[in-house]
Amino acid sequence: MPELHPEYLNKLASQVIMTSSLLSGFSIAEMLNILVNKYEKKPPTLYLKSQQLHLLHF
Image (cartoon, rainbow, N blue to C red; front, side, top):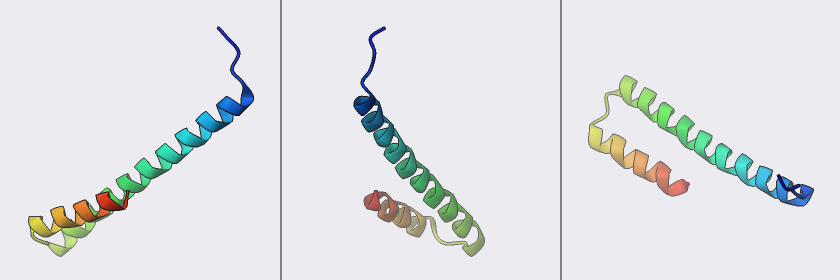
């Protein structure tokens, strides 16, 4: 197995960290929308529109 350069590993690690933080932020927003929708009894169309708005931010 060939040796990988430390610079390459650092860039790869930073990209993995960025991707995981974006995905976890989307997951948190999704769970909060589900909880808010459960307690406020919003119509489903408003819920879907808020999901699309959150998706546009990412």
